[in-house]
Image (cartoon, rainbow, N blue to C red; front, top):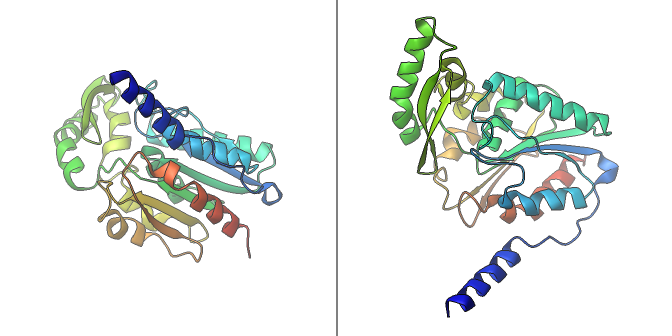
Length: 267
């Protein structure tokens, strides 16, 4: 019986993450997408597979860099330096002929895409799927308050580059991390670059934003009013509610994302 259940589980997983049907080509529109993984994640994470394959099948130039919040890098550079890494990924896309640049991600990657849109010009669209990491909001802000206070005190004492240990949070999970106070604050200061509510109104008016969130996501119900509604209006921006939670959003949104990209190419 146990073996039978295991076989069924494998079949279900294969169905959920099965390769999507070939998408209608977007090659003539010269799209380039930088898509970033979530906190403690990596570009090869299973939740990103279906969407990344669909984008490539539609002839969209795709870059999926390993970012500083990955499980292998552990905040090795500041958030500002992470933006520079996105610049390099964008430059690669342009070198491959991309004209319409979309920057996006899942979870922390979505949050970073909003920060990028707030600090850079020339971005056609922001693709924010199940945004996460909210140092400026709710329980997360309260849980990190002691760490933020300690890091600011060390920075004020001239120890901004010293070793700093802290407990990171990710969808109810905790993990010990080490950075410097300066790097830590670049991501976790509730009044800094990591704050989506502060970045939202700074996104350039000519940048469209696609925001998708599952109805079981912890940010569902608050993210729209606290963040999305502060983004400058754009006729092609979209707010989409999906079934499921935080992890499933990229797989659930494949068709809608491709339709949105097509809309960006229209007058």
